[in-house]
Image 1 (cartoon, rainbow over the protein chains, first blue to last red):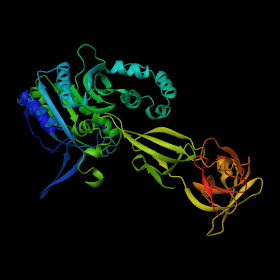
Image 2: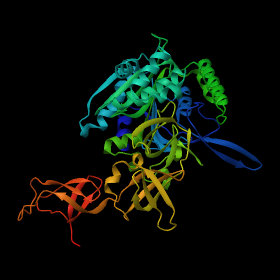
Image 3: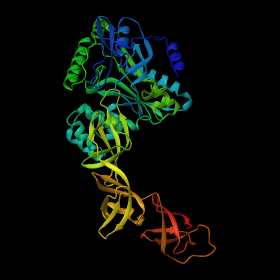
Length: 306
Length: 189
């Protein structure tokens, strides 16, 4: 699989890079828990972070003029362990300068269909978030109606959602999407879901045509989430504002503090060319390629035995 | 009682949910790459036996339930309650028919069974997987018919009714699988 991926990018003249796993800062996403470690250089001690993804470092390379790049490397997310999660996992991440989301999706489909060529995958599908959400829940994900969301939760056998989600629209979307929508996506096919609601934008650009959705895409095969991509946000000020908002949220939820990555903001300010980026969890991809039921089956030593 | 977080939920753990004791059957970690983590838990209500699915936000916790399984000897039925005894300590428990439920028809005096205690009060009774009981009533057998093909109902000494092969007679002891309620074999004394 790794050799096939490397050949795929070599054929397209995308440069393989390596970026540090240890960094001075880390993504501020309140949903991602990180690992920290102590860097000792007596008499100084400093806390460093193990990267939850190579995103920031790779964007700095793109901003510095690297052109299109890819990386296969480890990423670390604390507290994530389960049938589809291991706190240390392998990620494929790539950036395509001059690509928009639609061209990125063409390339993703080529890559995945090539890797699955011997497993006769159905043709890839592209569906908007709104389309899949409406078809499996009957609710409009872009308009929050507390009453309608509660009714659907009670009728579809997940009444606990009402207590868990309250009036938090983003949380409702996470809940309903992961319970009621995702399991049905990509039956023996790659399903690319694009146009995520603006409240789930993360590091994606807001769509130029509709400010309620973002230029973000997620991949699913047989209900398993495989990866996430963006038409990248290049506006340093907007990025800085989003960081501040997430930092405030972290503080509010009493999560471990972290600092925003000033290097990234500086890089954006210096000018990140228009580009699209994608990250795919390779352990899960290998699971699907080998027909395994759990991520532990494709890891040499899962965390419990690492 | 101890508090358990969703990370500690595993098959067999007994917890309190909606004021009822429950056993965890399965716990799946559900987390979108960018989004809230949940635990989708399959859980059995030990009072009603019903299995349900419930989602928790990861990191939430539940109180543990003081539930234990104890091997006991079934003593007798006084018409209102069934009485059980722990063989080692001679401690006795009584239990009404509602709790005994379907298990009652497999209970013979002096036989042992598993009593599930919640806060030291019986919650459920499980008979052994196989019991040996005497037939008290059945139609006359057909000599020579040693194979399957049909069968007939037979009433056992505890009142349970099972289907048995045609050759089995009144007064014979048979082995029954209590999980399926099916005849297994004759038992030679």
